[in-house]
Amino acid sequence: MARKTIIAGNWKMNLLPVEGEEMVAELKERIAPRENLEVVICPQMALVPLALDWLYDSGIQLGAQNCAEKLAGAYTGETSAELLKVLGCHYCLVGHSERRSLYGETDESVGGKTQTLLNMSIIPIVCVGETLEQRESGAHFDTIGAQVTAVFNKVDPEAWTRLVFAYEPVWAIGTGKTATPAQANEIHRFIRERIKELAGEIVANATSILYGGSANASNAADLLGKSEIDGLLVGGASLKAMDFSQIIASFK
Ligand code: PEP
Image: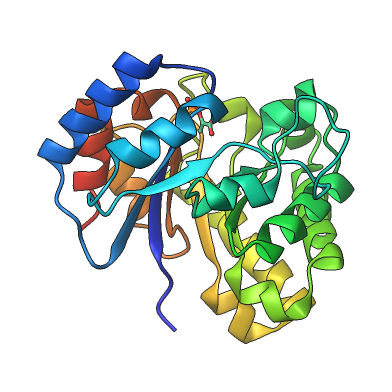
């Protein structure tokens, strides 16, 4: 089964309604829907219902940046996966390194949120990756291996082929330092091998693994050219239509 290529923009806590609307209007002028490529935009939560309108009939999919593990109830400030579904989200990021480091998300809670999203038929983009310290001490394979394993421990086997992963080395996020295409490809191959051990070859071959970490118009083509890299998760460079559309155009 051919893996889907996905280029997703993570707007993080940026862009007000006017700015988001302008960005999407310009993006729609710059890109045409392509059958072999899924483009996704993940705005901050309060923009999600507006973005559904902005993206109408564009072929660009809507994603969220986070959701609650619990289904509903007394969880002030949280957003349920069910609401995301009703609001039109096809995708949701899970376990972004900012959520793990700033908001205490663990491998287990990331696994739980992933299952919650799958129950709502939302595709989770599960972010994994090592810190600089972990890479320098040689702990990166163990760290990433544990992050991936925790997801498969929590997710029902029938949903395994609906998972998407994003390898995001923490030292490359928002720093301007990109993993080299070879470094990224090595980790993507490791993730796929781990998936194969946990879930078998069919699931491993079907799983899209995106790269994220200072991806931009200059490095996107080289990253996307690697055999194990099935797309990009883009932060800073997804905020401007010109930059994001150039990244999208570099997928051949
Ligand atoms: C991200 O936050 O997911 C990300 C990849 O950010 P940036 O592209 O800015 O490094």
